[in-house]
Length: 346
View 1 (cartoon, rainbow, N blue to C red):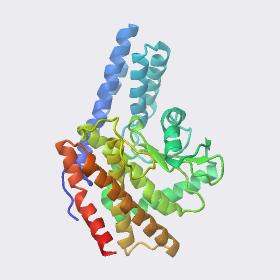
View 2 (view 1 turned 180 degrees about the horizontal axis):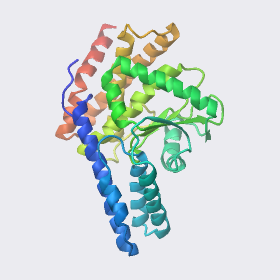
View 3 (view 1 turned 45 degrees about the vertical axis):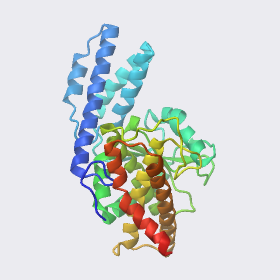
View 4 (view 1 turned 90 degrees about the vertical axis):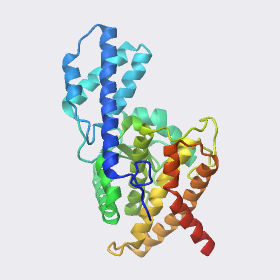
């Protein structure tokens, strides 16, 4: 399968992606400095030392995801003339710059260990859970023993990703900072699978697998899924890609409810990557898997192929794309043709 070396591709060139990531981080650092200047002007204060610390941040690699969240919250507080919260978030920025500027090593965390977790679930992810899964429920932290067990499963899944395709592994190493784990209050209730957001770039969230699924296959799929969203956040930072009206919604490949074109492109891009990852895992002779794992993997693989085709056809029919958006769609066309050929032969 031919892979374009363009950044606007199903598999962006890793060197180009690193450059875009650096640019994205630098924009965040510059935005924080501008927000700090606006706060100084409004409060009649001087934060020269804090400016210098921000200026010294290196934009390459992984920034602490908290910086992306603080950029959002400081901007919101200033816009609302909320002096109390503006001051609190500026102080939080100062602490973050003192304690943890970077996130070079991947960290697996318990839910609510990060200060932004509760806010995200109240404002974003809980709505998503209700929409995608059709259920409501309370989430809670894992026990220390559960965290240790899940860390081992995640490590095994990451090793499997590295074995199957170094391209995926390189992107994960470049972009992924934190994995946050949660569980439902009601045992074996599936509230959601995973989530990510550009306002905490580098962090992703998972509900731990239920007893009915293989944990390695589960994490293999959902790490690739959410890490791919991070890649796409970067592509959208370079170009809007989509010109469709946000009020118009279309048949979605991963949800029962219809979605706007931005969501369709995100889902289809993710599905295209998953289809190829599953195929590589199935074809890899070095990887030893139990019959139950292989059966589960093949079943999921077939479903993801059908879902990818739904998304691809929706974009092709209704998508109003920029020239780079067309490049992105074109990079998925060979995979769509392969799947359609399989369907005809079955």
